[in-house]
Length: 208
Figure 1 (cartoon, rainbow, N blue to C red):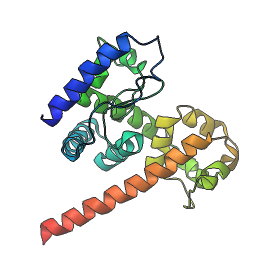
Figure 2: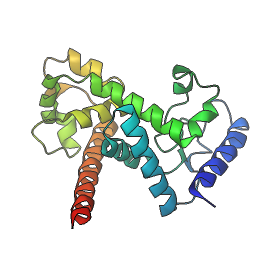
Figure 3: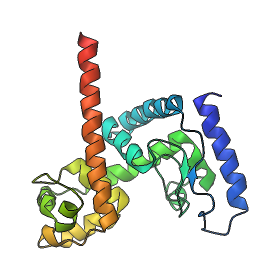
């Protein structure tokens, strides 16, 4: 079965299963909706990079987001988050999709993620770099002296209140970031760093 066929099969299965589930309750459906296939992950990775370039987002950052969310696998979350980027069903209306099921299309899923991520990126203020000393972030394992813009956008992707809370804070060390979101930011930063190192290694091999 081709990677695209795997995703489509997962989509059809999801639609049938969610129709029988209680409203807004996907706890019985949560988890991977396709086998852990390296070919599928590589196919999705290439698709994600293509979408990122078209949407004006760093391809490696968008890939890192997908790796943190699901390791780039078609999944369903407990709150019915959909696809490799765990996009909430409510975004279907925001993006004027005909149905929530369209978020299972891997390209649409990646486009939605890129636009949500980009919205966080655009709300960056250089002052937010001081959040690198935030107590919750450091407790989660953050070791940098400052917060970078890419990680802030990822934090906003996971915790939508981040831009407003940061903007209102007089002391960014004290912003009450949810512990799970702080951990998410740390994992994203690690995935981004690893992705950039991998890209640099591949580029060196290409020049060799």
